Image 1: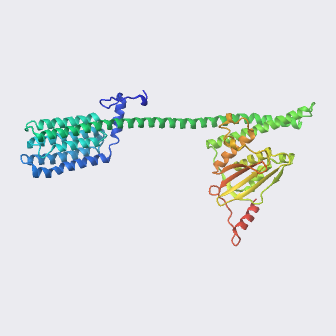
Image 2 (image 1 turned 135 degrees about the horizontal axis):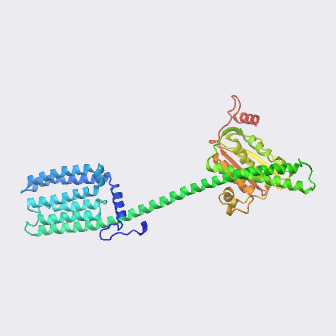
Image 3 (image 1 turned 90 degrees about the horizontal axis):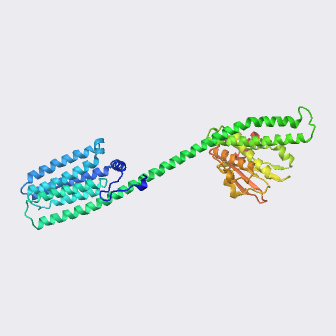
Length: 471
């Protein structure tokens, strides 16, 4: 039976499921707070203040009533002291009801001792009802039982008093107070139990969310484990395929009888290298995603990163007669050189692939107060910015992204993860001539390694001079 289908007994306000009822009682006990104790202390103080009224108004049983009131007040303080102990916390509702019942019966007993309802001691019974109404964590049945016991004790107390307007008024006021208090306690009890049901539902939702979160983490770990395993499995035969294809392409064992064999082996060699680069990208991404790669930050310059990345693209750029414009200024940063060089390479490789023959690729570097940026601009057809989120998360959303080049999507996915690991960001925009502007931005506060200017030289000029020497 689920929490949503649990039902309450409309007469007693209890849950029909005994296990749920027991759990609710445990829940109620844990919420007995200092405010409830303060209420009891105030009630005892008011009970003691009646000593003043007893002294000036009672005639028949002044000494007995004052003594009884003081003794019961001291006993009530001792009972409240029990609520600080485990035993008292466990039986808090019964202790509360015991205090109220003792107070109500004692007031009736005082009326009996005096033999009169004047002064109106039944007001104390009404106060008992009001206190029970405020102690909202006491169950309805216990509260109703205390009220009945107090009223019946009052009936016996006034049984020997001649029936008149004073007795009638006392019965009238007590019955009205007890009836209104019982109704209020009943609806408060229903409201508390509904609140408890909401609490249970929230707990169930929280548990489901926690399970979903843990399951998502397990799925990510499984995905990374599968990617790591597959990439390692692929790498060994790929190296063999590339090696044998290179032997055939170079005709190391003799010339081919058919010239097409050399072209075929060249295609095999190129396809194998492309597949190996893809496997290495996926392997690096999965390691970054799982956190198994720890950054090894070292001081380097933007020139070193750009030159290392370009060295892997020289042949393709020369074959297509691409024009390269490199930056004049460079800046020193502290990053994981291998990973950041891979990120710059991926952006440059995308620019090379997108550029037309004899196109221009422009690289620039910029510095602001807190950031250093590498900006790469090409003259290609331009990236679809509407699909940028899909591009950056290709490995998570492959089924939605089959129409985009694997080189572009995987490259940007890997670059995005590398830059995020360095607390940086990448962004893309359309160039004026229709190409793409890719900006890689690193935060100085996370990747700081600025050169200090020598004494006697202006800061900017000295920094530029030092950075040029370093690059």
